Length: 339
Image 1: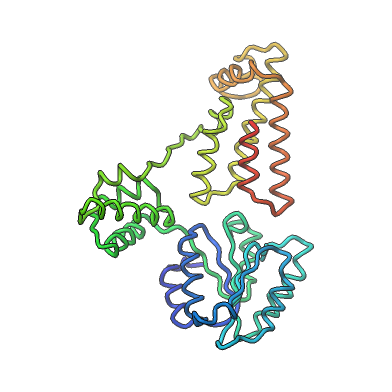
Image 2: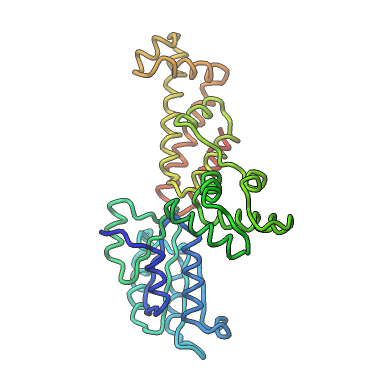
């Protein structure tokens, strides 16, 4: 399927938004929230928003969504419902039948704009099951992916100019390299930079201003997780988790890396317990000798019980992510803190 320009697509929709279902997903929360705001402004008069705009949260809200959908708009041609955390279209079995019925029924009301708002924790659209579910959604599906650096660069410059300041293209690129392409982060950074320039009575935002006000993203090596699990450093791992979340990475993939490292440490602890030297353990386990040497140093000062306790915690976190609708990032953070 051809990738669409989400900015162009949403502008076209807002110019004449049809009723029905809108399914929003993807990692760029700034654009997602802006579309939601623009849609509300386009379909509901501001002075009737209290009467015609409803937001609900949770997979157990299907009955309320349906009840609200049956209500005719008041002093307006449209009604809007935003449903957060619905679980749709990959609902848990106990909610699936009811949610599907509500979606099918609600889409028949011409006055209704029903928005299903998802976060990357809930739905990413990358797996085969998710792609199949996307193809069956009876409405407008919008994928809010992160924009390229080139697209974000133009947006940053326009935003600075709208604040009455200037920013060179080179320095705009420097800001993005320093802060990342997340538009929420950049929006906050630009606001700070423009306010700072105004305080100095400066017409331009400079690279020096960026260095002063915008913290540089932490760079993580390919072995960052492994290194800091061996060091048992929760603060470093928490910084990694925070950065990964801002980039809309999948928490399940990070957890898989942590589990792999925890399993490796358990195997190495047992080899050490059985009196093997690290070269012998490396050969037996089929691992790099230097890696095993570092792990030997790490597990030598902790008990076997503690090493296996962390592995059990990893398995519990994995089970929780697969069997419940709990906050995946919260589960991952708790695990890291238990190291």
